[in-house]
Image 1 (cartoon, rainbow, N blue to C red):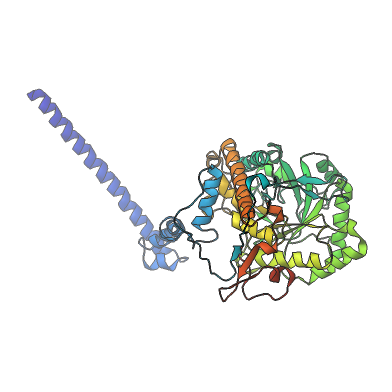
Image 2 (cartoon, rainbow, N blue to C red; image 1 turned 90 degrees about the horizontal axis):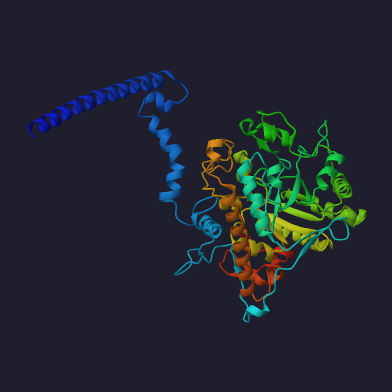
Length: 509
């Protein structure tokens, strides 16, 4: 027993000796680090705080960096965070996981804010046996050799391979197939990952013509035919401008231009991929109509345009020239992007202040098409911050045929709004090409979440439609909603669509 106690005492003394030596060593390292930081801070001239308050001044930059994360989880209220608040994101997360999305006690959404949309419930909502399945929507009927028919009114908006990682694109493709919705390629061309899931594809022709450019960077008829020969490619979209940065081309930092992306786009690897701010060959409305007609004739498939609405005088000329040339020169669809849109990288001056929000631009375009008798010829799609059922239903009431969402599906993939899209450091593996960060994004698992999100959102929009007294969402129109004016009194929505007497507020969707 005494020998055991002696051995234990010796062990304890040795442990304390080693621990004290280790502590002294670590303390010495810490002291050396502080001395190094002190010398580095007082000798540098780029940051005044660090120079005047060496070492401790570094905490200011650390807390500034960490502040956005602390605000998101500890300080921001459910309805106040931007660009998407916690209540909006939480609904998407629940829908994507296919768990209960009901809430209790009462709404935390203010019901009297100017610009808000209020849906008008009907006295006799349809009974279960009176509910109708979603009707089909046809694009290019009578004008494209291969019209496109879909029953979906909620689809995946343009997100390029490059801006998004390969696993993210794989998950979106597989999820879109499961949900029966389409996937827009974005301007980064068509990759094998888009095709992997077997979903319907809308190929976007960006200003750099990635995927359909010849050696001079011009639009290639031969490459258009090759793309159109793939059954999954259902439609083509000519991008004129993009939400969040209208008037500026696409930006993909060189760190994201991997060998696979370079081959897909036809550009050098490792170099910044910059698109022109517009199609160089389009100088006027006639040039645009000729390009629409050309792409449709070459591909045989529906062709549309995508634009952010700012100055709107061109819409009159656009409609007038279509009437003069004939409906063959009209786009089969018009995707209205908006200042509400998001992007991986954009100048803050554009993302904050440029372009009209969708709550103004959608009614404006719908009204112009009605005015010139083109509404039945041109399908209207809109995009820009509509990730919840209320926003989608409101857009349908305001005249949209379909709604596209990008960031909603990013949330379905697991995005936590860390605002790292432009830094190749996305912690969820969605907007990064760092293979270590991508490992946590399982395409099989996330595809199921993408499908659940799309299906649950459309189901809840159907619930809104039924409450309004119609049998399915495509029957929603301006009679089923009103807009809160600045006086707090609901105003008829047709004031916004037909321009009767626009009240001070504009509809928030």
